[in-house]
Amino acid sequence: MASLSELVEEARLSARALLDYGDGLFNPTLRLGVTGLSRAGKTVFITALVHGLTRGGKFPVFESLATGRIAKARLAPQPDDAVPRFAYEQHLATLIDERRWPNSTTDISELRLVIDYQRKNGAERTLTLDIVDYPGEWLLDLPLLNKSYEAWSAESLALSRQGPRAAIAAGFLAHLATLDPAAPENEQFTLTAAKLFTDYLRACRDERFAMSLLPPGRFLMPGNLAGSPALTFAPLDVPADGSAPDGSLWAMMKRRYEAYKDVVVRPFYRDHFARLDRQIVLVDALSAFNAGPEALHDLEAALAGILDSFRIGRSSILSTLFRPRVDRILFAATKADHLHHLSHDRLEDVLKQIVRKALARSELSGAAVDVVAIAAVRATKEALVQQGRDKLPSILGTPVAGESANGEIFDGETEVATFPGDLPTKLDGLFTGGAFTGLSSATADKADYRFLKFRPPLLVREAGAEPALPHIRLDRALQFLIGDRLQ
Image 1 (cartoon, helix red, strand yellow):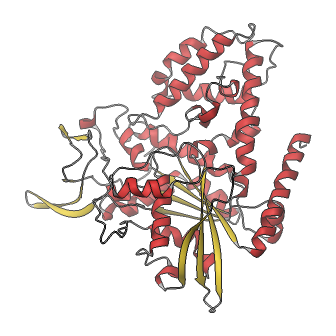
Image 2 (cartoon, rainbow, N blue to C red; image 1 turned 135 degrees about the vertical axis):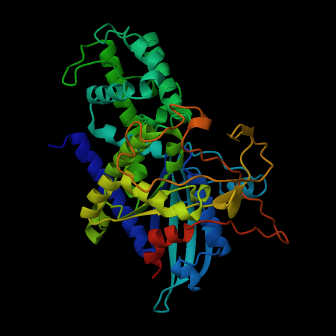
Image 3 (cartoon, rainbow, N blue to C red; image 1 turned 180 degrees about the vertical axis):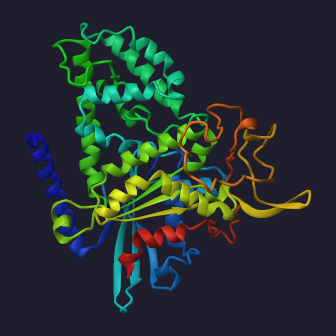
């Protein structure tokens, strides 16, 4: 039976959905969520999407733009006064003028884009697209709403003792062994445990390991909550069905875990997540290949958790009135430009394998789900490089300063040709230890895959005009996400 607090929360969500529905009758609005785990390219995706629409980019697969039915797309004032505006102009300048990738998303932001278009029957219409940018790590917190502190502790500790994580978590686990959950609450013990646990989560994100399943998400991007009790707790070795003694360290940790859900998770779910209509989840699968099969397995678990968070299914008038549903979800494998186009289908197949179980559940619910390999901003070109009698399908680009391959350290200015290798065609056993060698168990020169980081392409402004941003399948992503709303 639902608790009183859950019933109140449901009522608040339904009231908000009803208000949004009323507004949408006079001004049709689509709320598009853009998320992904760290370094997946959320900021670049939104910047390229907005730039392409407002500039009239080359999007042959995006039917309404390719056929000229979109008359104009323009930015409008930020819709929510309490949410930061996505810094589109700043990010665009960073890409074009500085040839740097924008900083990663650490908080939520929004941007409103108004699209004037002509329907296929000739009628003139306007669609308001509200783009909501938020860290994918926050999605991994949503399952906590239905999980006790004891259950979360058991899961977190079991995970920390597996595979490469065991060595990374050694400092935290050693401190944990000194703690008695039934002992009196102690602020210093708690602070130390929280710091060591956060250090472990942060170390898991290193490119050598590229782990993805790292809740609580706000521990790695605390913002204005840094140092607050709601972010100062850690898992303890306690029985899943046990009860915390009053005044104990256990009770203190549990209280703060519940505060985290109240202060961080529920407001995000209520005010932002539950209001989304469409969603794109950006996935950096190539970083997982760099790290090793354990990272791929971890990514699979993280994406399963992310999709479980969505209230998915076909939208109807009733669902829109009382609880909106995400009726389209696109999983996009980013950085397709790091591969020759001959391997793009393989990258899509890998992502399909990663989300296969989650896809089956969502399709049964009536949601439309797709998988695509993209590069929102293409950083490389393709070439055939002669090697002996063979011509290898290679890519040309400028590696980021400090990147290295075959003993060479790149200066960030020199364009090089690299053969990135082919992704596997046989996916069985790809997620098990020993399937291939990654950075988590070998040096870079011994790893089976080494996908470099490249600088954005060199683009030239002509007569002060902003140049087009080259891309791979950004138009296909747009067609799936919003094409049906522009018919």
